[in-house]
Image 1 (spheres, one colour):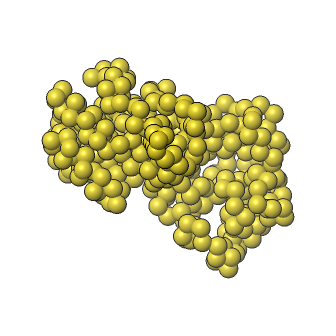
Image 2: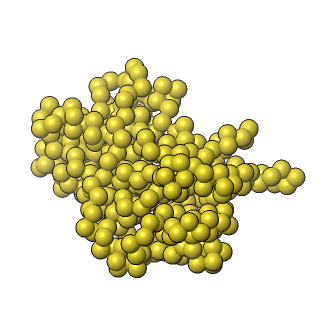
Image 3: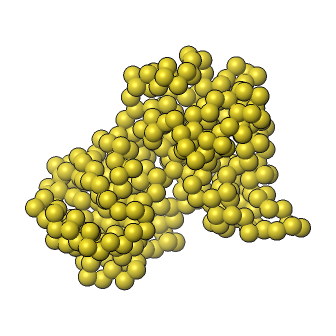
Length: 341
């Protein structure tokens, strides 16, 4: 097949990064086919760092918004592009509407939410075989139901060294070594290592002459300020001052990254950073950092993984034990080994 492909991309940062594994596999299988990705506007700059993608096409709807009429019009506007196949990564019914109205001959995805008709190449999802999200994405590059877990190529973004240098200057980061700390987790508090632990880690790094760069969204600005204050100024708060593509370039020149299981964790891994990843309510068995240069802290408690946004445990049980039991000295030890600090 040499005709072009349309991928309906996921709505979460981490999933979009992991989807690059599928794009790499498709490019290997169909080297003459152009691959376009239909995705939320926020993700288009990230997609622009993926060399396998010809173009990102904005899906101009809010997260969770149905807007059948708007999706129909968007699909009709894509009819003349002549896509041979669409692969729909989200499991929702609405995500299959655009490829249907774009009249794409082959429309592939997993059999979820009664999408019969909208998709005509429905695949059963064998969760026992396809244990991780990247495996589930990559399996859709092949024909028919998965018979074995596929090999998963690691996502790799294009980092811009000149832009990274300019960012260091603009953000007053200096020329000394830096470790990026990403303390946020959009999913919820049950994925967030305590701010006091990040502060202790930053203070320990500061005593070694290493500055911590706290990276996060604007709404995480107070969290960053709390860490800076508790670390006695050993960290600099960059929350709200960087875009997603800024993060790609900054972490590519950091000595290492310490983060929760979050979208930025996957960005850091794809940018080639050394990653110390901390897991609470989720599990690395499902969404691992896709790099050989990672250290993972996960306690595997009897209640793990619960996948809750907030810890459901109440005293006398120990709430958040999956995270509070991961101590800063253990993370510093992993960081020292991984990054030769």
